[in-house]
Image 1 (cartoon, rainbow, N blue to C red):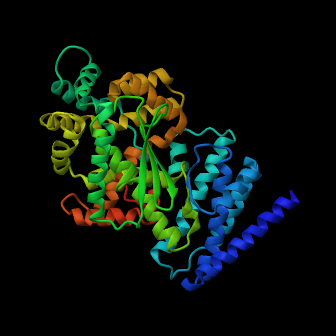
Image 2 (cartoon, rainbow, N blue to C red):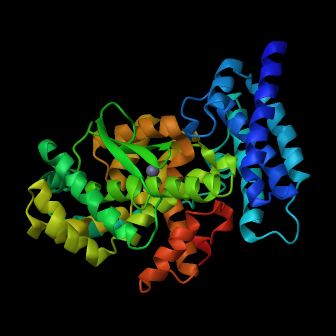
Image 3 (cartoon, protein in one colour):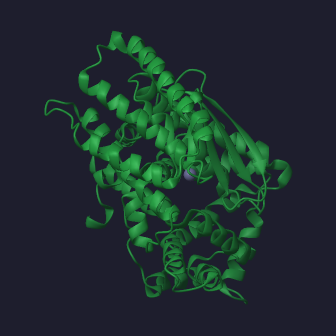
Length: 445
Ligand SMILES: [Zn+2]
């Protein structure tokens, strides 16, 4: 124990020396230096949490020895909780000076709130049960609005009229969609075409770090449909789950969401602007169950619309994506009209998760609800329940996150009629540490 502590302190001193030397040229202020020390303590706590929760550390590209130390130490949850409380006190005692610029103020607020979410997750892992909304507020700094079945009935009626014939609505919707599956042997070519399109559009508006790139892998046996694993050094590994048929809309959705201008770009910009240019080490770790995820998922989803406004998307689908998948481009318009209706059912998924996690319905009841009001096929509903079991109230980060990000960007002039401004505000958001509660509230507009 003594040896371990001594070596940890030793390496911390060495690292501080390296940091101080490296950053002297930037004339580090006392405040920055204090925040860097607090940031390092936070990174170490996130890594320590990773020893108790395999999903917690979504990305880490800071000093590798910190991770090794976390693995060797395996701090008990009670010790993590105590250290997090001490860090919260020290952070509260180190507010930025009144003269600080916006980014510096955001840094302090962000670290404070991220740490609060870490304490909430540690408490959950120690046995505390939170209700759905309490949990999402504690972990993601946001609460999703509630909806009744009646609110989805109008959309379901419109879909009934749009997809007439025998059988239930979900059966007809499934039959309709079956004509839009990307054949397995066209998957890679279709995704590559989509990635190229998303990247080209993004590069017209956002300067990325040189050498940025990602690789795509096809995997099975996951509760999600796609995942970006950011590796640091401006690289990502993107995994696409092929357990279930992949529909044509997923090409652009996944390429934008996981890649450009979504998760890959978000992580590249954080690494470039905050970690490398400013030396803000706390951004070299990404704890999945934290407010950062609402921003990450919200921008990744809104980024699809930013890169491909509706009319432009349809044109690109018809000209590039449908042909790449060997599908009839003339059928694209009606597909996206139906999907636009189904997208309005997205919040039904939050209701299923809320009731299920609050213990008001069981897994089967939740799958029934997803099928009826969210138009999930049975296998997809079951996959979604596995996702909810694993990630819980994380589900709100996708739809509520998207709506909050959209409202924020639009409130700053980045409307659909002003695409240049839209890109600019979008890029500003994904380059800065902004909390969900610091975004415009979509429900108050
Ligand atoms: Zn995502």
